[in-house]
Image (cartoon, rainbow, N blue to C red; front, side, top):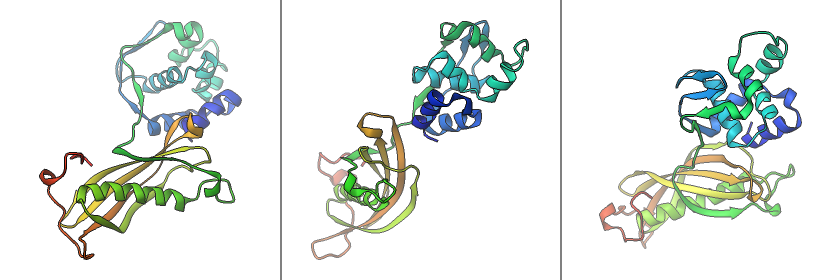
Amino acid sequence: MTPHALLDQVKDTPSLVDFTTVMDVINTHYEYTPTLFKNGDVENSSGTNEGSCKIFAFAKFHHLSEAQTLALFGTYYRDDVLGNPSGSDHANIRNFMQTGWAGVRFESEPLKAKAPVGRLTTRTIAMQADTNPAGDIFGGWVLSQMDMAAGICAGQRAQARVVTVALDGMSFIKPVHVGDILGVYTRIVRVGRSSLDVHVECWVRRSRIGIREKVTEAVFKFVALDEQGQSMAVPPLGDLPEYVESDL
């Protein structure tokens, strides 16, 4: 599940929210740093009650209400706490029910959205003409965008014509929809005598303004060619023009 889908579920059908799914979403899409946090009368030292820490941080990040935040705890809230109002377990849930957001304080920010790895090389908008019968963007269209961006990256590093010779580790993580902004990030991960490997990540901004999500990644392998179409040596970094960044 994506963060966007989880937020929709919390707002539309909070009784269906599952704690394990919430943790999966947070762990997949955010970088977590343990920190001390206070919640009403409860002080949680760094590295303790991390589920609560992640949920409160996620809810704060997305400006959720107190009721929506409690829904993120799933059955721990619905069954264990609401089903046993006089209990003493799940102190963070019970304290939050009493003091709400006014009682929550983090020593430092525990969550930040994961960022793309590499350099933004191309950006385009997914259009209706590129969809399959289900309404999703064709995987082949996404692959072509990745190949173009990887070719730009490899060609700048090689300072020559390059050709794609192989594709490794292709993984489609999420679909691309009409109206999404597709950003393709590239970085050189290996340079041989005449060959280069480029790691490519595709991220989308949903409906141009929504949540950013990683949708696919792969490693493209290229060979540099001279004017006669023969393989040629890739120049060392020191011989590259100034406009070519060394971390391409």
